Length: 310
Ligand SMILES: Cc1cc2nc3c(=O)[nH]c(=O)nc-3n(C[C@H](O)[C@H](O)[C@H](O)COP(=O)(O)O)c2cc1C
Image (cartoon, rainbow, N blue to C red; front, side):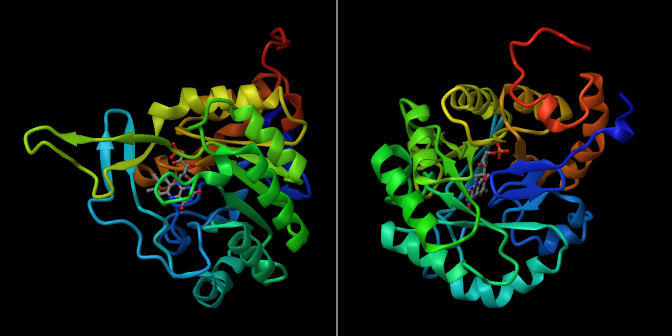
């Protein structure tokens, strides 16, 4: 297969992407700084930082710390609220020439529904990602840890808007497939796996936690095997497409997620130390797919266990 002939478009339920490489929420800001460093129009989609109904100051500092194979963060959904987002960020994002998936988080069911109906029809919003998995805010993971609450919030958002919906799940549960099935039953178009893994860092000399919020979310290469495991398990449990997120930094990482069952991927922590990584991965993708004899993404997605056909 000639790499130039490989089709890269990815279908996430009702949402179509020109390619499967996206940038993860909270790791690309609102794209303004990054747009100076790379041609963001080439990305499959941009996910701006999660927004909430009202402005949030976030958690006390320090809010990030590097770890052996990744980082811990406890930002706490610091953002200016949905109205400021629509007024100040959305027009810019809408002009970037790629798909914009707006990440939202509500404190409760009503807030999720209000956010969805406020963003429905707002020019420049192509889809919503429900952040029901933030470990850094009180109540942030409730909808991602209880299947019935998950189904209720996804179906409520589905009724409140006509936008495609991605449900972003937390790995901090006993059985992620039960939550994924609930998201599917609620009407999600796709499921993003995973948000960060709950962790902490300790300053033993001062006998204190290092993060201001004590606990934080672990991301980066350290969590890739956990994210792969989640994608593999959920792929066997639901019929809707999956988006792999967690420790992706190389083309091998991307291919592992596709083969394990992800239709698309998001790049997070790697953006911080290599802002152009997402486009490097996009450039490397056709040759990697061609190596497996694939004509399109679907020839590779979820093919784990199938014998080498190359
Ligand atoms: C500093 C930082 C801030 C984040 N903020 C958000 C956020 O606002 N909303 C969200 O859904 N995920 C957020 N995440 C999680 C990432 O989107 C992603 O799910 C996670 O970091 C795993 O991917 P990675 O290992 O490639 O970073 C954040 C991650 C980091 C490191």
